[in-house]
Length: 484
Image 1 (cartoon, rainbow, N blue to C red):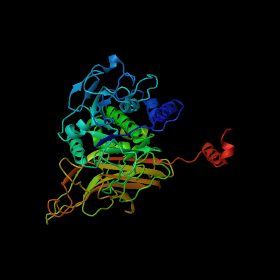
Image 2: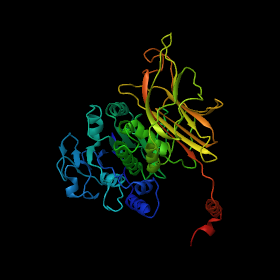
Image 3: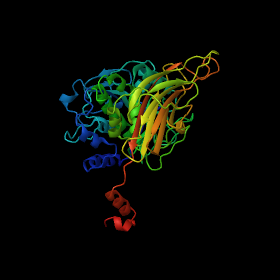
């Protein structure tokens, strides 16, 4: 069964205040900072999928009304493609393959609304094409049949009962390099399609939202965004993904990186790595993401700067026991990589651990302390029920001491978050664990895996006099701070 996330009656007012908040200087997802840095990042040239559930059985309401979200008749020519419950399509509105949906209009307004061209409320107002699907047809025909569509980013503000669809979504993502960004559910535990391994499940920050882990113990949601409900939050993340895809395709990460930067694994790693941690965010070695916030609150500016920092290959590779290295090429303190890692067979028919190392030298960097955020993502490969087991370590490269690790055996994402690192040399290590082949009694699904790694060693700024005054001011009694 498919259910859309019904929006409370006050949601429209809340969304309006959120949009107005951008204009008032509030920037909850870093969008205004990114627009100030580069106003051409609007989603231009990118096709997006918007999948919408019907409000009730027998209805046909899944369609976006282009006029409501600021897309004029001229703008909509060739831009919207509607696909109904039986697969019938239309490129005009209104049409006979479906009817207008208020829910779809709200999601569209957040994602690509353009009613105010000077300050559009939509994250990606200049997308080139919107493929608007009925959710049942999409989930039960397009996905399992692996039918190719134009969109590389697909927003899904609906939920399915159970998790049976996850395998199909993972197969599709791996086959077509598609990033599915799905609402997490507004209560209980996360449900499909947000629970697919290869997609991004989105929670609502300070709104109605499901809390992880999943029923099979995995870390979901992946990320959080502002919203009264997860239907509001998912399109913010989808819009951010569109902007990153646009930037990647035009070479913002450097010459020759467009293909790698456009990979859905890289986009996912960058989105999660740029997220801001709330004060009560937490995780463990074996549960890489917070059960409420995932990687944290979406910040598209941070993610874009991480992309822009560039792609850097590893400093060296080792086999066998996982340990630090202290020599090799030095990579910068921020960047990303799309790379492959392969286990070799030993003499007994088992696979040996393989490690890719990224050496970072912070000894001469300005700043007295640093915060590391690093995210590792990879696919559940097409046709596979299991995932390869990859881990992420941070070593002190000088002493060989393990500083932090993320070694979940059930997730295809690992994340390190290490505040207050002192200047020095560090070894960030991606490990593909060995063992017996899965076809026997082992856990190695395939000998090779392609992964995306994003990393950022951010200097912790010294507190300024003004910041100290602000802290002192914040500590005063509330009656002093608040105007009457």
